[in-house]
Image 1 (spheres, rainbow, N blue to C red):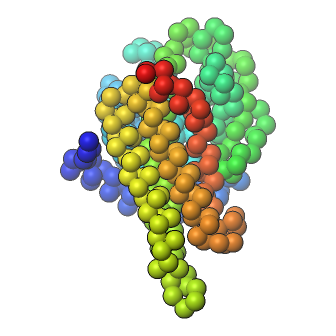
Image 2 (spheres, helix red, strand yellow; image 1 turned 180 degrees about the vertical axis):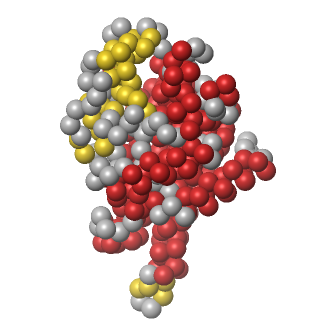
Image 3 (spheres, rainbow, N blue to C red; image 1 turned 90 degrees about the vertical axis):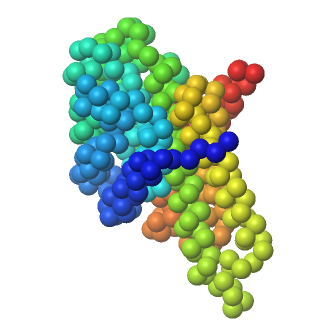
Length: 319
């Protein structure tokens, strides 16, 4: 099955790509890793103005309506440029806060504009740490009695990806609702993560192909070696198989399809990261080299919003 984007969707992707290419995201990522969020929040505001976060928000609250396919298009580009911040978590928060009443009116306009980054700690699903709990303006946590607006976050814990700053949320605050749509929020967050991973994998492949064309050994580019070509072809095939999984899941939005998309996209991105490290040689392992920003993100996204074993279980339950 072929999933082809229409003209509007392709133009949207192109506009985001141009915006992010001009944003010097490696510098933004390194600032964010040090806890300096000014450049990152400025980028978030531009993404909000471009309509990225509004794709998870109904029109009456400043969004474009729930548009899963366009959200996947946007998050592929966010992954391609390794944009930092609680991206999938903000999408999950938008779903959790969409009660069609007071909560939606209170929180969703800020989320749609990009001015209110949000994070979520899903204790009941085993996701106890909140991404960027120190930086988010809205911190949501699963409490025994329902959805809690946490009053703050504890000390930041560094993850494999330095730009993913994890922190436990305080178990005190305002109770927002007794029966929030946890399962729906999880599905949307997984789709966003899958699309991000696909974008990360595409960026790793592009960077590696460009590098092996320039790096020489025995007087010829290493990209001319058959073993190198086969390794990159395997990554390309994995990404091409992951792409229809992601966009197919965005069409159906069923938990098994979304879990399969996350499994396929994250596996492809991880394969791309391993190939990139091997083919770049020692320079690929240095934190100062920009490749590391994508390599660590590919590894971190693999376990975000559902590790591979959990996603396999969701897919197999349908069978």
